[in-house]
Image (cartoon, rainbow over all chains, first blue to last red; front, side, top):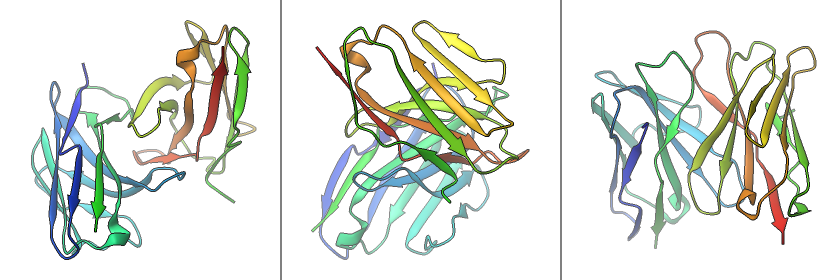
Length: 117
Length: 111
């Protein structure tokens, strides 16, 4: 149980293009989904918290107009990196909380490795 | 001071040995605590939650000391498959579900 999928697993794009990443909870409904970014040899950094049907809450320093988050249902959240630049190259990981569990555990998707050339 | 501090290692330990990791956190209001493991270029996977009473799952034992704001993980009879980075993770205060990750401790089990 508690499986989270993410698509695509890797993507290479040219500078200036936009990339959409999907995050799905497969066998549970997610109260909240989270988007993280991880640079090499660094810890995961929370970018934003996404609640179904409402606007995402972004962490300080994360541009909401550059990283568009849509949380259309209890099982799907998307992150769109708009006008990507090489410095946006990173490992993007989503996670989800199970709304039927009274716990703060988060279940992570397999991540999307983005390379902007 | 970092919110969650861990010794980055690396720890190189022979197979079958016992190894312990420690972690300290700065927010005294933190409510929930976890150990995750992360393999190279993969996502973090929940290893276990950590409770004040201590908890054990097979070869793994986790302990929380709220007074000292200290969390530990003990791995007994280590296996080659235990090689990974171990992440100490804490939440915020009551109602704050955000996870704060330590930078991780790199463990390599040597045959």
